Amino acid sequence: MCLMVDEEHMSSVMDWKKEGAPLPFVKAGDVTLGKRSLSYSGVFKVAIASLFTRLYMAQIEGYETADLVPNDDIVWDVKRGTA
Image (tube, rainbow, N blue to C red; front, side, top):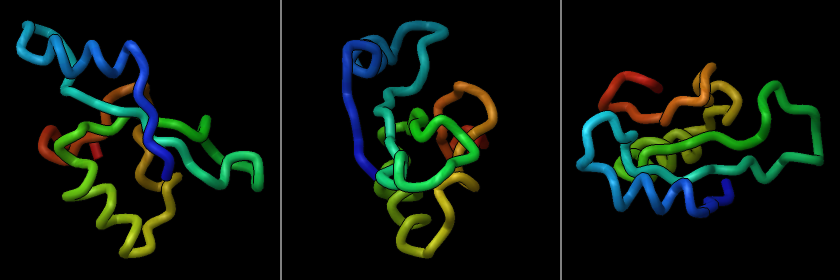
């Protein structure tokens, strides 16, 4: 995984207390993108709170990244049941 941050992600951190705002997130990129055909775009949004507690652990446990990616453009977060 490669973690990326841009203006959209910074806004999610700065505005997270506003009503209707998404959870603070970063974008995770699959490092195998370009080396093999993926069943998804190769990137997805991950809640910062779930990065090390769930995403990192899932990677260590051997889960395929494609199996973790949500179907929609939602923030991957275990606490809200979107992963």
